[in-house]
Amino acid sequence: MSAQITFRPVVPGDFPLLARWLSNPHVARWWNHEFSPEAVERHFGPTTRGEEPAEELLACASGISFALVQRFRWHDYPEASQPLSAYLDIEETAMTIDYLIGNPARVGRGCGTALIGAIVTDTWITHPSTNTIIVPVSAGNTPSWRVLEKNGFIRVIEADLEPDNPIDPPLHYVYRLGRESSGLTMPRESEDFR
Image (cartoon, rainbow, N blue to C red; front, side, top):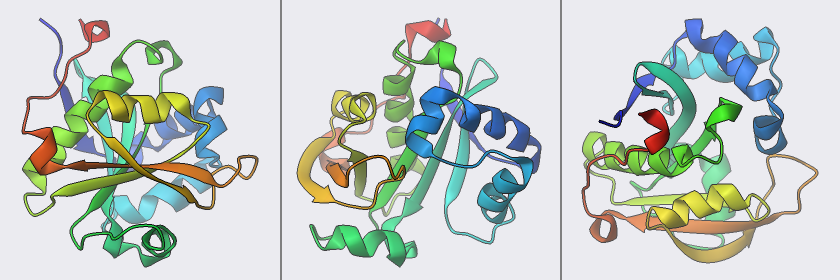
């Protein structure tokens, strides 16, 4: 039997793990975060203390953390939603996700696809007023936008947005998934978690 993916909030005790993940080249290339203990606390601490409305979630399979998902309502962060709203209307309850596979051994093995399927299902269950997930992805990050497509997200526009990593051009593909088009399914499983 394959392991089901579950989520739990990040706690301060997870910061060393997040620092390790953020320092991995496959993560650092796209996330471009500092990973010193002070930087990790500065970035993740406010959410863990309930000072920010976003969610920082560890994804676990068979009791082992393997990925991070950030989730928030677009309208809770006007500095993020305003540039995107120049390209499309963002519903009041629309959410977004950002994600990384922390363990390099899990990359390219279907874990990202399973992760997105699981977080979509979790979003529909835990945020019943949310009907849309909108995710901008740097156009050059093909693995990231491919896992969205494998989970039914539709590319709705291309937008010039500030990249997470300044070495990237501003071109982003913006993906949308509506509750009505996704159906409520059980989280996807990956053979790699057996």
